[in-house]
Image 1 (cartoon, one colour):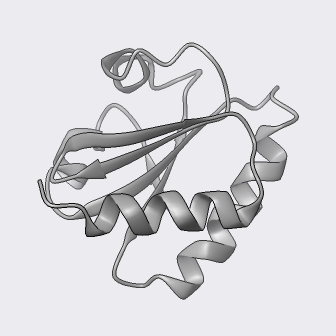
Image 2: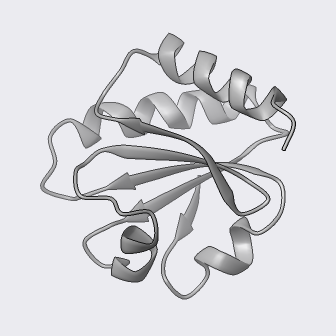
Length: 105
């Protein structure tokens, strides 16, 4: 997973399909979601995975109106195509990623 912050978020995510994990260091459910996404990233090399500490990347966080953690944002060419709130099993993330990445813009 690529570490993203306000300094590189827009530049990195403006093209291609991205799965972005917005998390907080004090968030217990985030510690469950991050390893799931890291494992999924190993099996989906054509998709970019990013990680954002939302307590420090406020500009990026507020751009998507994120108020709770964990929140996973699916982006296609810089535009949000799906948001996933809260922790879920790997199959849910896999299914939502597959549907969003296959959708026409």
